[in-house]
Amino acid sequence: MNHSLVLVVNCGSSSLKLAIVEPESGRRFVEALAERLFTAQADMTIHSREAGKTVISLPDADHAQAFEVFAAHLSTEKEMTSRIIGVSHRVVHGGEYFRCPVLVDGDVLQKINACSGLAPLHNPANLQGIHAAIRHFPELPQVAVFDTAFHQTLPETAYLYAIPYELYEKHQLRRYGFHGTSHNYLMLEAARRLGRPADQLNLLTLHLGNGCSACAIRQGRSVDTTMGLTPLEGLVMGTRSGDLDPGLILHLLEHMDFSSKEVDELLNRRSGLQGLSGLSNDMRTLAQAAQSGNRQARLAIEVFCFRLAKNIAALSVSCAPLDALVFSGGIGENSVQIRQRTLVWLAPLGFAVDEQNNRVHGKDSDGRISPMNTPDVRVIPTDEEVMLARGAVSLIAGESP
Ligand code: ADP
Image 1: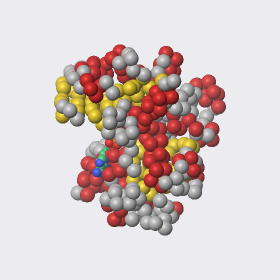
Image 2: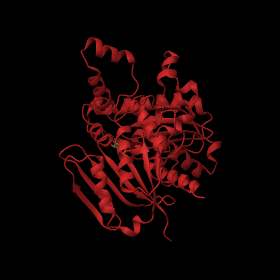
Image 3: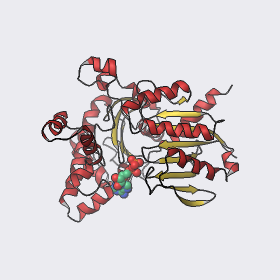
Image 4: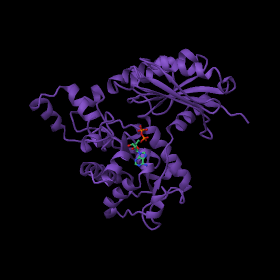
């Protein structure tokens, strides 16, 4: 039987990720990744079930040009293209406007643009992707799915910063949270595996990739998360510092002659695992280096795990009694060592590791990596693209008479 397909579009600041996804099964028919856009080295790799792998050089291309190349590739696969019923776009910042996926119209475009000040690298790129898709597929419904939407249920106590309240009222300076699509997927998948409705579950979900965030979920709703106004707050990440004393920023500006641009670059691109290790932002590289005796690599891993454990403990106040702690993202899904070291810090809260199940990433135990008489800890691979595709389908289905 031929099912409907959704084109999923994810525009980063210098990358474009595209996938044609079958929403029910999660199967991918085509996947493409354009990287290093706006540079002479820009290229796009396309994996297609029909045509295999193709690499196309795209010197100095922008998002729109990369999208054009992808659309031209699709025109050679007419049968598959005819099954696409909509385009689903990942949009990073939806401010306080969006709590769920929406069909894109003029008003939505204006609001995404209005949030650009809060996500200057991401929202303009997301808009580029939407405009390119509208140009190429004017007949298809376009859907926007927001990274911030899942966290719009945060209570005031969790989203307010302790700064003058008028800065929130007049300028919307508050905590928003990100990776919402991933945390939402992990909640639904945990509910499926635990055999209980999501709205009865208390969970703590960890998305640990290049960007890292944790989310406290109480009865199916996000009630606290580690990222804030921007994706810089919270955990130690690949190149981002996560939490630090705001006084440190003042010190850099006032006493060390940093410009605001240099502080931005320092905290977003030269900190985190990269900054601590002086070696790499990639956890695999650090794990290997630490094993061969590199002290700084080992230190970066220790700080990462300690800060993660500390944040898990802090988030626990919002979601006790906990039904499951979920590890996900490239690091959470693949690193036996990071899971183990983090859980050792959490032993005072009763957490423990089943070493054998952890070693095989919970593959033999429906993801479970903790012993039966201790808090449930699972490894669950995330799938943001399938959430984007499903979000679009439910909206499009809801639209038809
Ligand atoms: P993104 O946020 O870009 O989607 P991923 O979710 O793919 O990133 O996560 C990338 C991170 O996952 C990198 O730090 C990478 O080193 C780490 N990672 C992937 N596989 C492993 C592994 N086997 N062991 C440790 N870390 C891993």
